[in-house]
Amino acid sequence: MLNFQELRRKAGRLLTDPLVPLISKLKLTPDMMTTIGLVLNLVAAVVIGFGHLLWGGLIFLLAGLFDLLDGALARYMEKTTRFGALFDSTMDRVTEGALFLSFIFITGVGAWPYNVNWQLALIFLALIGSFLTSYIRARAEGLDIDCTVGLFTRVERVIILALGLLFNQVFVALAIVVVLSFVTAGQRFVHAWRQARK
Image (tube, rainbow, N blue to C red; front, side, top):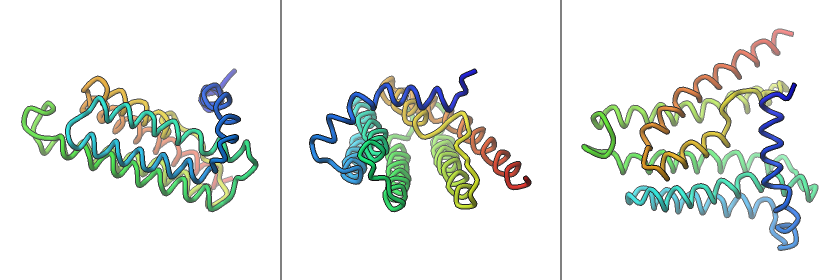
């Protein structure tokens, strides 16, 4: 039976496999792809902060494609390095932080349901959940525990948040991110605990 991680990898490869050989001919390196993704994400955050959710969502989706392609390109070119992995993960956190910061600028009376305090609390919880999901995996792998388990990884977060922006349902998207990020963090924590006991 195909598990969720395998399904996710196969879906990702359907998107990246046709593009990676073409990108490699452009002499772009994986770190360059990561940097382009970072710039696009920061542009998306600025656009969202000014209230242009549709355009911000489209740019954010494009940036997410670069986030998928940098690792795939590194494997294709056999240029995977420890620093490249660190650089990619660090830039992922920077871009997530910038995105959640941009949401603060579109809060306010009438912008989303409920009052501003609840809006800000939701953004903060989504930020914690997203960072915690990634941190548990990184910390576990630092202890030589494979921790790729979990229902809701960065790819799913990008898709949900992009859909929230495209359809002007940021509050709903953030609520989904909060719930599923904490579920995934719990899954990874329990998995790491079980592995550490063996």
